Length: 241
Image (cartoon, rainbow, N blue to C red; front, side, top):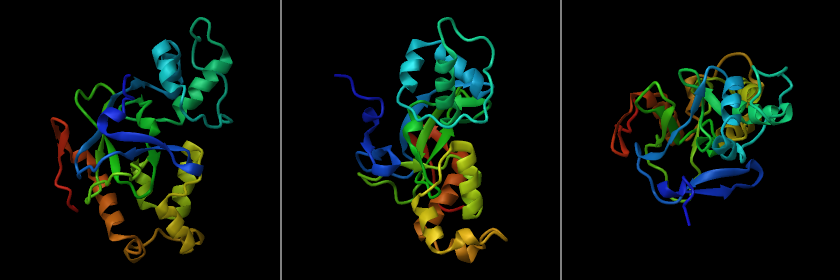
């Protein structure tokens, strides 16, 4: 029996309750270690990516498990549909691509990476691998203390959101990905009443109310593009800048 792609890397797909499914570490991982590699699809827009997915039976099978988001902002479709594809099928494919893709020299879609959930206090990050003209990526541990077995692996869908106030962060995530973030950091800040402060971004004393390890993870996440790879392990200092 063939292993699921993530299982070969020591990851487990688990039901995580109200938040849905997610990938969990099936073993201990060190800081800088590669968790998963994937070569995805790339096109100039989500609309064109959806057409590319629909043109391949293999690609259709790869996206069948993914979340679909609201499409109230979309009108029509991009270009001529592949033979035998209905508009309903195109809208379904577009919705899955739209809410599970990101910018990487164009629009990049990674069906397996889409199983990793978002957090505003990430312990992992996506980085691009050579050749850079292809959508070839790796998920890498950025948590300084590593990731222990049984821990969910999470990354930030948009690193720019890591350094904005709670309300603005949630607004961006809701607008772009269709969910209200309830990660551990957002819940701590909500309980502290930070969502009610709309005037200025939080100062460092407020940021220091996070656990120290979360601050280190955020700084390491921001520095992810400095990673270089040798074999399956990143050459990463795993220290604050």
